[in-house]
Image (cartoon, rainbow, N blue to C red):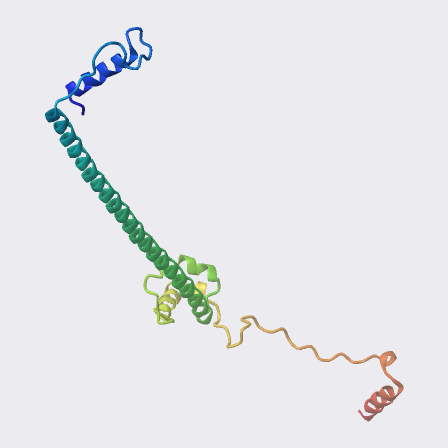
Length: 195
C-alpha cells in the first residue's frame, strides 16, 4: 500500500504536468520540480524491497499449496478409482458365481426329477454353495423338498439326455409289388410260397 506522502506527491506531479488548463504542459508551468531527500528515497526502496520479498514468499506458498492440492486430488482420484474397480470386479465375480451355481443347480434338479425348473426361483438357496466348482448342499435341498412337496417331482430321468420316453418303434413297412424290380418280386413271391 502506498504511503500517503507518495500518493500526494504523485498527484501533484500529475497536476504539474497537466498544466493550469488541464492540458499537457510538460512541466513548464513555472513550478519547480520537487525533490525528495535521500533518506525518504531509501525508505521507499527498502519498503519496495520488503514488499517484493513478501510477494515472492507468498507466491512460493501459493505454488506449494497448488502443487500439494493437485497431488492430493490426484491421489484421491487414484484411490477412489482403484476402490471402484475392486468393487466392480467383486460384483462381477459374485454374479458369475451365482450364474454357475444356478446352472449347476438346474443340472442337479433334473437328476433329482424336479418336474418344473421354474420352481428353482422359489427355493431358499442359502444352504447351497459353490466351492471349487462343486455344488454343496443341493442333495439336502432336494431331499427335503421331496419330503415336503413330492408333487414337484416325477420319475427321475434315465441317463440319456432326453428325459421323455422314446416313441415306439414302427416295424418296417412292406414294399409294394409295383415298387419292386422283377428280381425283387420273384424273391418276395418265393418267400411267401414257402410259408
